[in-house]
Image (tube, rainbow, N blue to C red; front, side):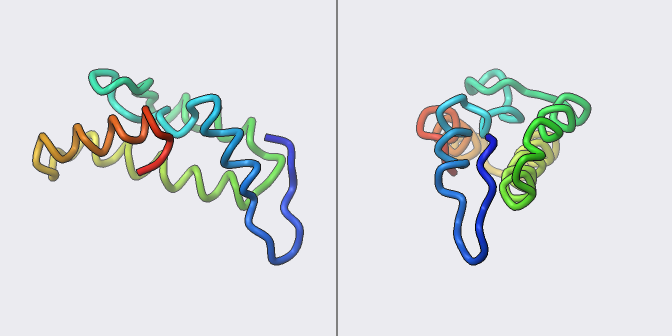
Amino acid sequence: MQRSTTANSFPYENYDDLRRIGYQALTVPREFGGREAGLFDTCLGQGLGAGDGATALGIGMHLGLFGRLSEDGAWPSAMWERVCRDVVQRGRS
């Protein structure tokens, strides 16, 4: 991810790149096909995305949310599995 956003534009290409490499599944539990990265590894990955702060912030919020939700078990099991598998397979939630 080395593209930088210009004023008033959305970095579609950056998110396409992230989906292509499966980055959005970094914090999804392994049992659902993710990489189940912890905080340290997620922070390392985010450092690699420093080329565009807006993209790093957006994907970081997604990764943090999935990391936290994996730990709290607040969602019904079937729904949580469906959402996680969708992130892994289609690159979005």
